[in-house]
Length: 151
Image 1 (tube, rainbow, N blue to C red):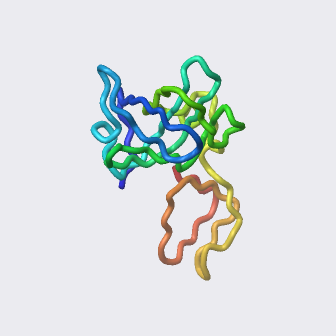
Image 2 (cartoon, rainbow, N blue to C red):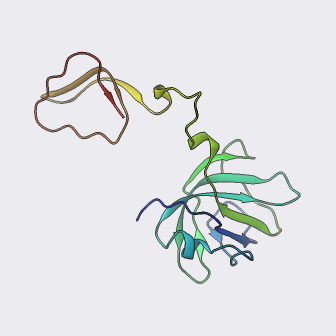
């Protein structure tokens, strides 16, 4: 399983509720999620009901089935206070997107992507007052002085 982004991936759905989305096929000029993202892969998705205020942006897993589906694993933003939306009836658009909150910008600082740690990781590995961005793997005994920035 991989995380995949792709352009021009868009389908429709008539799924209601808060569960897994059953996909109904690609819009003209677009690819299906199975073709553009691949089965068992994760991607960013957006779902919106045209003419309605219901929307959801998140991370989902694509499954090649009958019908194809995309799960709603993690909600990033939505019209339901950033929780899963209980979608009402109607044809909704489902498409691959890149959420603005996940995109770097010139106004962001390293602390947007990193965490400060002051904890012992094991008996012989301690990181104190360092900035880490992951994933980070440290093996063996390390002695580091000064400022540590891993990006």
